[in-house]
Image (cartoon, rainbow, N blue to C red):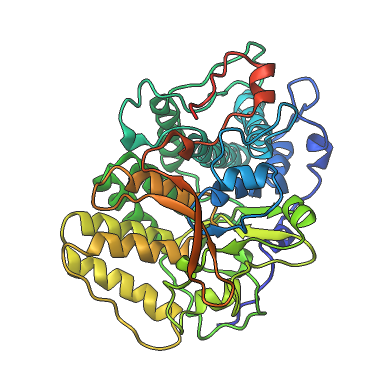
Length: 457
């Protein structure tokens, strides 16, 4: 199999039409964005912004990342150390702001596209597809936001715990408070089920940045997994894999050292999403390191470690910036299947899935084994190796694991010896179910809209 390994941002080269800049060069609203034809809206759906996002801060809060103790105090370090105050009064939260800019673009499509006149059945079919794709994109962003700023669904009190403002109307003028976790998830499920029910939606999009039915089913599987609805999570993961279940064999593909797979050329990807961070590199003069204890969980012949970290601990970086793969794809669906099977004590079936992934990722044969008591922990451990620095997925998993006494743990920020990787000092801890698992709502956001209540710290 011929595969080209490039930055995830190379997915943007496959965009079919870039003319939509005429709509999106400015922050869109109903006054400045006036698409009037199906082709106009298709250009908006094709826009690169819908595949780009910034959830690096959520990865910094997980146990995958590693900072030196004396690192400069800024919002990156504040997030890593789970400090009470991550943002100063005047700082912008790029994760929050960027996500809502994109949601506004999607809301414009979903609000205006149904009102335009179509000229023929082909345009009617295209309109149906575009509406479904906009709903899939919106669901992806709201699921991310809900898990960064809100409690996990399995925490209980989902009808009371605040998540994020649920904005669906591009023309709204009133300020909104935070919707509950349940309200946000209800909208996510509605958007995704509407998309799946769209007969015209193709199984796979025309490129990796265009959602198809597989990505909607995959996102439904992820959503139900986070809700603790394992029957529906397994059902939707299986349905997505029925559309595509191809795994890349890492032994057979060429790549440049310390480079991520090009999402545009990976058959594993249902929907490409990529993150980029430049500011961290500018401030700290390096890319992020992985925690040595995490790296120690990789076997010597695990090609995932070699690709992402080489023979050190510093993550992929090029030309003074870091890029991240936030895609939905085959391996995540396999891990969802495995977790759901493990929770039913179907250990042999879960191991078959894990070992299929192992054989595609390892230099040599190394099948995994586990008892009924060990299998769920093993699934989480293997999932972590595949989905590290993946837009907060590890942090979201940690929040879920905290609800299980057998899986929860206290996370520590420690200083390692440079030569032996032994712990020489502990200086920050995060207890299970601590409110500091939630990202602080930036004071600047609350100052603009006092209806947005802060997260407890």
